[in-house]
Image (cartoon, rainbow, N blue to C red):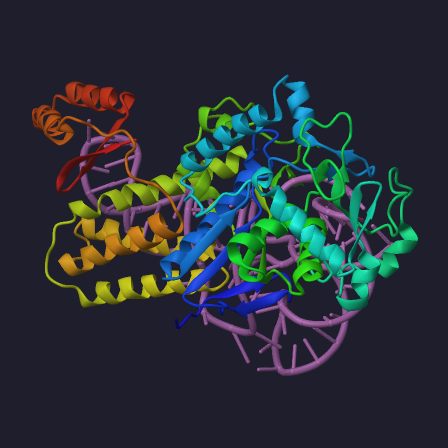
Length: 491
RNA sequence: GGUCGGGUGGCCGAGUGGCUAGGCAGAGCUCUGCAAAAGCUUGUACAGCGGUUCGAAUCCGCUCUCGACCUCCA
């Protein structure tokens, strides 16, 4: 496949031409949610960013295998060096079985992905269903001399690893220099080296989920599931690995170490990281308490926002920024995005109402240019921001055609619709069609009302005409007078 | 302290060694009973100080400043 796509690879810190390992197939792995609570709007941004990337790869014609894992098991280590079982904690807090917790939040997560028009991945493997695969990877790491077991736990031997592979290549961290700054951490005495990380954590009496392993009962470490599942479904090395920027320095670094340690190769050719969603210039995070849930934004219950916003408006807002840039969310920013969004959408919905006339070569060429510029923007590391700027240009041309300021033939009209379908709907993933299907002939009803109002206006009965217009506005229908007559818009 | 990335017009937000990003808001005009919508016109911004260059907001250096990560995070 002849591709012009360039993407920014965190590994090389520069844009690289995208050349899949096994075209036309593309393997894409994205770190999914941990199901111990509801994903917040910041989490959502990452999933939307990679949904757009998945969509564009598919649009280009690649046969993409998209794997997004679900973390429903495993232990992480917190900033104090303590071993934490988030799902177990949530289970105790909500007085449920771990599986109930996972099920509950998975339903929420799935609803969220549908609400925001995310395409389902090909596979959404869960960590709990791949304990055996995780154990096998750990065994390989030990076999290769990069892991050691202590009292029923297994750790990754970073020092040994560094004899053969560079550690810290993603984030640019230098472990040797960091050693001097090792903080006094609790529960670290089993490790040989401060940077060693857990592959398997021995059973603790408080654990609510326990699995058997060659090292005794316990839980897998946080990072190993991704190595096991990406290997199982995409092979020991594949094309693209994605995730949030905050996973770069630890989680992804350790994934690379595990993959190299077990299989001798970096799992992914291209590492992509999406940036954080900020609130008042600060990253949204649970520890800072400056986060809110996507559904609060949709139903307008968040005190930070003056009104509810449609999921497609929120998605459009996110697409207005580049996935690698920080994005600041605020009521003002969303309102401005919403206005722009409505302008686009109303224009796009009117394409079918353009009266076809004679072919317009100038317009045709402008449309081809817009289409080419959309592609160029997306080819340049998924520059959705520039792509949207092109769509605003398109909306201008549509409006002019609609109001007979320029002429368009069927050929141009079809091209307009095709660009909208390709880029606005398919690639950016914005669902702009009317959600509420109207089951009666609204056009006829509206035509009747518009005729009555027209007669009133001809009779200079402006009281009646304004009354009709105001009542319709209140009901959510906006009348628009122009030279050609009156049209309506559902607002 | 280390690593990485920012500081762009009233706001949001792209980009970049010389050619208008775009959106929102504002102003003017056209249309119009009024309004809305739509169309047209309008804004010469790139943290500061030096340097490189015919030319820098874009490259280099320094300063200030903000943020992320450095075993919780998407």
